[in-house]
Length: 406
Image (cartoon, rainbow, N blue to C red; front, side):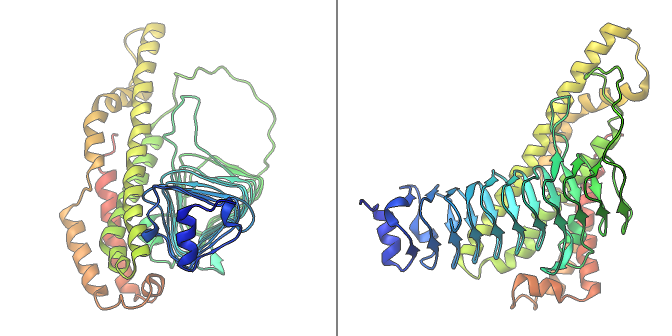
């Protein structure tokens, strides 16, 4: 049977490819970005000029895998499914039937069981997802090792769509300023449950299985439980009559602030480790692009929300008269009017003087500590150094949240 020239070239370089005639590698793929030390099982397809696959990665062990413009570091295992526009760092494991869409970033030793759907998702190191999970538009951190990690139980959903037909619903489970230090208590979201975005969940939180969480959990170390079954109720409802949006806006700005903080962390800290080999470098480049795309996505969703609110104001005026109470409609007006200028500011990598000063101080403290791996370096930092880094990243978050409309 016919074996493509790209597959033949990889075989000659030492790659293990089972049933080579069943493997498709598109002409757009640059083989210099594919390690010779990989294993590809039957039925796999690899496409995209930005695709990069690191050493000792295993593709398609339990079913066909499609890879489109993804960057994989070393020791990544993709057992089955489709992966497009994702950045997957060292030691990540994906079970079969995955559906991973663009602007997804999984950091070291994160793992997902079978039938997991991700999009615009960030999992920091060690975070573990069970099976049959839809976890789009959210960021999750927490945990200190593979034995002490944040986890999402099987059959879990992050609800990321609203009757207003927008997705200004990204949820923050943990945060970036403390999460990147790899010293926080894990978070557990119990199986057969869900999280109604946008939500914020503190470190050390345990949400009981079977519960749909509809509130922020901002104090650490809480057990959240309750009956998943409620009596059916019926009330009058009109989709254009929005609730108080102050919490929604605050959550969105905090989320965007955390994306900016992680962008800065990659640019100034993880970049110190990225030059060690070409596959880490391509993953680093991919992560910066993915984070930029995530910020753009959140701005897009808030733009949709602003448009919907402006439309709602017009309907309400027609129905109830021109003079409307300030609560909640005053905030609708201010947000709709101010948003175009705010959106432009959010696209920038905003840096306050405080953030620059603290960043330089933190980088000075870790300047001679980057010889070992990224994970070992961060985990071994003294508490005082971690606190300095957290203050820097929190000031980046605060510079974004300070723009929030009130």
